[in-house]
Length: 337
Ligand SMILES: Cc1cc2nc3c(=O)[nH]c(=O)nc-3n(C[C@H](O)[C@H](O)[C@H](O)COP(=O)(O)OP(=O)(O)OC[C@H]3O[C@@H](n4cnc5c(N)ncnc54)[C@H](O)[C@@H]3O)c2cc1C
Image (cartoon, rainbow, N blue to C red; front, side, top):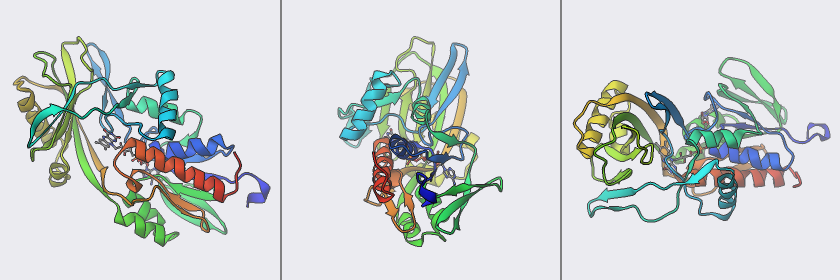
């Protein structure tokens, strides 16, 4: 392989799965190269900066908080907590379903400091990540691969390629080079999610900072983004339910924002003009049907897949998928460490 040099690995996608995979490979002495179509790494660990009269504020419009139940991820999280790049999530969170409204079951959660995407930047810090680099094709070059990017340029050659992107996109990219991996990816299912946000007066404050709803309405989750600051305005984040998001997937963002913000105002009983309204459409947001294995790796083709769609709709499971795929790649390519 590659004239005795360490194997060169490409990772397509720099969300938490691709970053976890890259960090594990890198810790063993490899220098993986990551390609991401976004402007910065993180994928669904996503944040927007919003200018307000009280200074810039962040909205986490993808993942809200994450758990660290598994030992390996808990160790990684503890190190970032120590560096103050992650902090425990100390919001008053409630849920409401047909049995009424009550506190969310106790499960320690974590958030990035000062926002989710800032933690993604920390994960990516020592990795070689090419942003604004959408991969359109994986081309075979003997036993190696080259990637064709959206701008038409070709990458250098790699001994192995890992796809850490949502299942439908992985299936498309692997259709020719690894039909079996592509077919498995097509069995996973992800639901869309419309996100919206706006600023509303902080007073009167509701009895919760975040509320998960399961009651047939348009809202699935609403959360204050400041955790009880003394500012006169609070920024609220809204996630629509999967059913509502599917029904309104192609709607005009302005109409979507109007509907979701109106539903939020009704929930908060605040009949005032909202400010700083924004939206984001996640086409592939939350895993509804997972593969049930933590990754795929074809040891003959040197092609693999990781990401949340292997195990379930959580940051922790995406991390686990990427981390465990890296272990398999290292042992398959006989890399020590
Ligand atoms: C609205 C919402 C709420 C959520 N809430 C929570 C929560 O509260 N707690 C929790 O634990 N999880 C939550 N999640 C789920 C969590 O965010 C995901 O499980 C996790 O972030 C997925 O990571 P990933 O690396 O598998 O995929 P992604 O984060 O999607 O990363 C994939 C990356 O691949 C890139 N990409 C895609 N195609 C290409 C291509 N062709 N070429 C190059 N790059 C490409 C994308 O730009 C992206 O950066 C939520 C997700 C959403 C959307």
